Structures are given as structure tokens and as C-alpha cells.
Image (cartoon, rainbow, N blue to C red; front, side, top):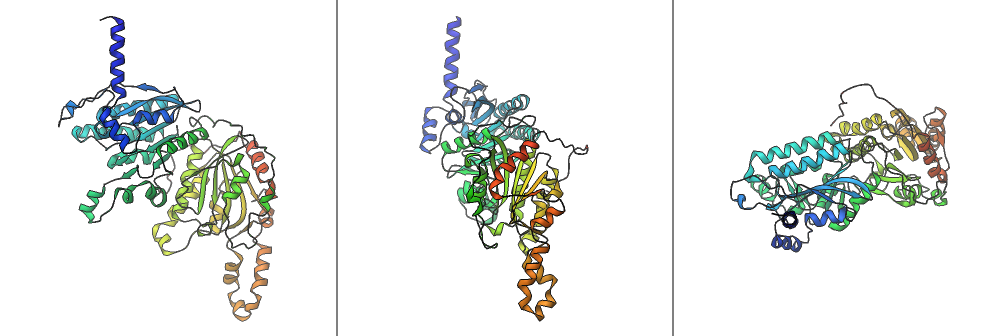
Length: 513
């Protein structure tokens, strides 16, 4: 056989691999409103940059009839590519090949590309659309999942790991995404659950649909498993590209600087009118964030989950920062179990990847009630304390309005290692608010002279609950004009750019999980 003949044979094999499970199954995938594994990679990667690995690998099983279903590449497409010009490693499960089930060979392909990502120091992005472990391969398939999980853990905090759920993920298949840094899901197409509706009905007699059990909306709003819930596959993959653009390639490098054309010294007069005149009235803290960051470009994480706190990525003077902010629109911005866990996870992610943390504080405390106490608000709330105290990246905090009790401490206070702590003149820092303080301290006096309440509250505000008392002790570094917030944050982060902080030598801490 001549070399030309061999090249023709090679092309034939690669063309066959590109068809996955064949034209009929590709058409069935399209009829479900879903893209194929390779079509998804084409949308995710910069045009012409995807280089495939192991396109000619076939599975080894000879059991239960799958010996006749040997497709080149098996049930996953792997390789490397570029996103916004920056290298990434990727894998995409192919539902057209035996339902995208993970065989021993498919797991080996995924592990191989994960190992390459770790060696190269680049993000790993996994597109999940499969039926879980391949039943016909028994423990060999389960072994494959274990190897993937082990690599997820090894890569955690070293390279960014992103999971995109574009079909079913059940049983053991859900644990790899849950270990990764971010999970994307698509409405009506994505499902994640340990056991499906049939098993749930058999065991508990509950009748539930795939969507209500483990759809994108459920995981984005109730369980918190999904960080992003998107309407379409195309929009989802575009959002993944946007996320990658904010991130560094690994834990030893910084995120790229992106010039946004936004003047660092820009002042916004509207900052003077964002806070309501009445302290107890709510407002949207995102209006503060949009006015401070570059070009109002804010990638909010977990936007529909624990909405009493806001977290996300933005840029200041072109540099990526992580934003954490209490949201007075929901539960008065109090910290509860879900908000504490959400914020703590995000703070730890930023700390892993050298992303400075900017915190905006307007918090009355931890949410009271039996549901919170019985649910473990003590240990869950401690996660946020732990995360801020452990973080060694630059930490800049700005108090907008209320900062009361233990929640003041937890939200990036000087006492947990805040590097630069600022306050607007409206800042009120105290053990509790004036009304509650007066009720506790002057209970007897109020019973005799209830008309003295307002004067007592005014006295408390003057003596304790204002930024100047806290600044007088050095716990706030400066009280600033709200219009200068953007420039003050940028200057602070520039000063902290080469911050060095070294923790005592240890294997790892024991965060309250």
C-alpha cells in the first residue's frame, strides 16, 4: 500500500470518527434540539484551534452486544484548543455513541486530557452529556469514574475546572462536575441527580419529573449545584468563553489584563443617591457594583441562588477581581446558611487563583430562626469566616451602610486580615442596630419613659454606630466619598499587587464542612 493510499485510509478513519454514532443518531440528537459533541466544541473554541486526541480509540468490551458497536473515539471527544487566544484542554461526551456512557476507554481518554491540562497548566473544560457508567463493562467503568474523581481533586486549586451539563448526568456521573469550580446547565436539556425519577418512585413513592428532580432551574435556585442556568446551548457555551476570559490559566499566574477603556478616575454622581434616605429601606447593591467596575461588565455567579448575597467576577483597571456583596433586596442582606456557603466557596476559589477580593458590606447580621439554627448556621456561617481569614490574596472591603455583629466580622473585616478597609460616611458599625441596642440596654428606662427611645437611639448612633468610632480605632483605614469608590479600590489593589503572606506550614486546614 502506497503512502497516498495510507493517507486515504487515515482520512477515511477520521471521517468515520467525526460521525460519532452515525448520521441517524446525529439526526436524532438534532431532533431533541441538542448539538453533537463536536458541534459544541466548535462553538466553544476559537475557530480552527481544536486539536483532537485519541480519535481512533475503540472500546474493549465484548459483553451484552456492545462488541458490535465499536465507534472510533468511543463516547467522548477530547483534545486541546484556544479560547480568546488562550490554551485550554477539553472533553465532550458524545451521546450518539452508546448514549454517551463512560466505558473504561472513555474514562482513560478523559483522564489523559486532564493529566495534560495539569502538566500544561491550563484550564480543563468538560461537556457532559451521557448516561453514566457503561453497564456492560461493570467495575471497569466504575474504576474509570474513580480515576476521574481523583484527578478532579488533584487539579483542584491548581487549574480552573469547568463543567458544562448539556444532557443527563446521573449516579456517579454527577460527582466529577460537583468537584469542579463551576457548573453550567441549560434549561430543559440538563439534568443532574443521584437517582432518577423511576428509582425515586420505587423507593419513596414520590412521583417527580426529570426537570423537577434535577433540572437546571432546581439546581440554580434550590440546591446551588449549578452556578449558571442558561436558556440555550449556544448561549451557554458563549458564557463559558466569557468566564474563561476572566480567569488565569493556573494558580501560579495572574489573570490577563484586559483594557476596557474605562477611566480609572471616573466619578459617578449617582453614587450619592443609591442608598435610600431611610436606613431600613432596600436597594440593589448591583447598582453600586456596576458603577464601580470597568464598563459595568459583571459576571455574576450563582445569580439565582442565595440571592441575599451577590458574588461574581469583574475588572478594575483591566485586572480581574472577585466581588462579594450583601444584597439588601433579599432578606435585608442577612447571612444565612446558603449565603454563607455560596460566598465562602467563591472566596476560596478567588484565593486559589490569585484573584483579589473586593467586598461591599451592608449586613444586619446572621438570619435568626429555628430553621437556621437547626440547619447548622453555626458551622455553615463559620465557613465564611474561615474562607476570609484563610485567603492570602489582596482583600479590600468597603462598608456601604450597616455592618452589625458577627456578620461585620465575617464580611472581610480588618480582624480577619482585610488589607484595606474603607467605609462610606453612611457606614454604621456596631454589635447591633440602634433600635435593638436600646431595647436591650435601656429596657427598664423605656418602660418608664418610652418617649426617650429616639434620643437614646440618637445617642447610641453617635457614640457607637458610625464609621468614625471604628476609624478612630484603626479598624477602618479611611472614610471616603462614595463617588471616589472606584478610584480608591483601584489604588488599593495597585498597592497590594505584590502582596506576600505566608501561612504556617501544614498539610491543610480543617474547614467546617
